[in-house]
Image 1 (tube, one colour):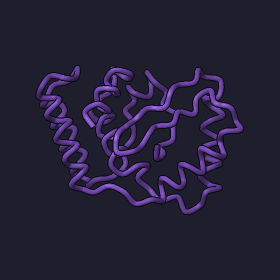
Image 2 (cartoon, helix red, strand yellow):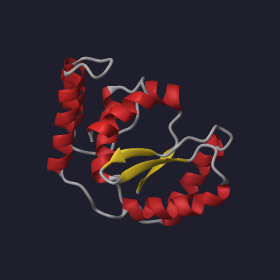
Image 3 (tube, one colour):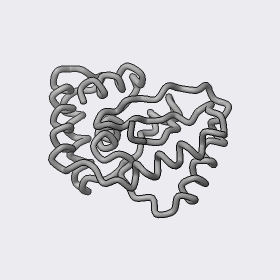
Image 4 (cartoon, helix red, strand yellow):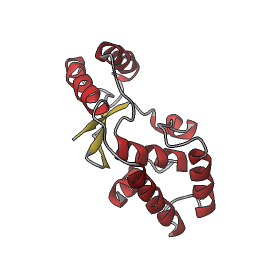
Length: 158
């Protein structure tokens, strides 16, 4: 997990604590929600792809836990069906545990305590505390992350 966190820092240096929490959640639980209707997921994928299809393609990102973030920027439309199938299958497979997630959060906090980020341990601890007060759940990327990186991907099993 440490390698995935350091990779995130390297490729997305403006990532905030909440963005790392999202990464950790995805590495533990995958997409984090069931997809009962593959057609709904495909429609959402296609809508998002329409907005990013002309952007430069990006490599997939290993996020740990056997998952990758598969970028949809600049990909050919013919790949959308395959990506949606992998996404739905990954989302509907129950994985991860609260204990595993909490251990990864502790690693993140330890790394913050070692000055691995552009924010301090106190900032990281406050973000984790704020996140956990509503329970373990999927979260969004920060506005800063969106502004710098325009994330467009699907979390899928490797």
